[in-house]
Amino acid sequence: EISCDLPDGRMKEFDLGTGAYVPDGSVLTQPLKWSLSPSGPWQPLSPDTSTIVSGQSPTDDSGRTVEFYLSFTADYGDRPLEAERDYRITLLYTAGLHY
Image (cartoon, rainbow, N blue to C red):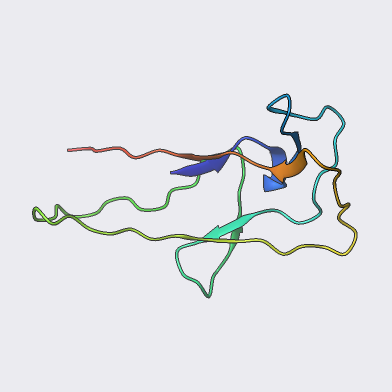
């Protein structure tokens, strides 16, 4: 599963000195998106979990590689930030094993 900590998957202004999001800070226009293919389809990140893979058959000892891709498109209206600030979002990954 994949999810994020911010509404609509849009990165928010983060203060590197305090290690926290800036209250009432700037938020980027476009969301960070994910896909299982570099050509899409793309889905915006969300605090609600999305399943990356499920219902897979058992593998041998070498396992299986699962790839996903992230995409972000900057917008001309996105505000540049001062020193010691950047835009951030926390991605959350959950791996589980079910028999």
